[in-house]
Image (cartoon, rainbow, N blue to C red):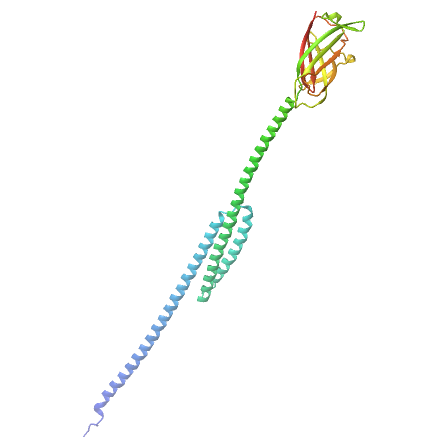
Length: 316
């Protein structure tokens, strides 16, 4: 007869317990794995976000760099050509800024830029901004100084032009004064008389008959002139016939002189000693080398290229 053992009822229960333990262990393992995967995903997400932030920071810095360089170039462009001496300064400053910009680009292009590299790039960019500001200040100072010098130069040219105008005016006035003085210093006759004589036995007898005239005497006085130079003045006398021709015989004292710049013939030459004595009478004599004819004669006296006096006389 078969008999049941006392432990038989507990075997299914033990199996259930083992299964439960196994499930708990598997659940724990899955939980741990899930946590590890979640943590790893979180870490990678953080790294990705950090990488993305770094990339965005790099892009932002690059844009800021390009904007700064473009702004500087626009700022300094207006100075080019304004002042020739500034072009070399602008060129040197552009080279310096480009060198610094190249360094910043190098820092930003080193693969995955870390925080230290980004901080260094940002610091370099701040230095670049400072340099741009400093260069702009220097250029503005040079530009303003150049404008001031140009304005002073324009003012100086204007003053020089004014001085030239004043000088020319004074020069013209001086010339006019000299002309007035020269004209004012000219001698002029106050009276002028022509006497004609016939000579018999060494004595003079006045005559108006042309064929008998052997001597002509011209007497005159000089108008008071305190600005005229004292001294000897040459006097060229022209005896002009009724036909309008100057009696000219070189062997009898005739020659050539000028009157107001024009060459003229004269009949004879004399001189006077001027001392500005209006009452003093001067006389010049001449013996005609040819017989005279009746008619109206003109007498002109010339000295120093101008007419000293003029009168006429008539013979029959």
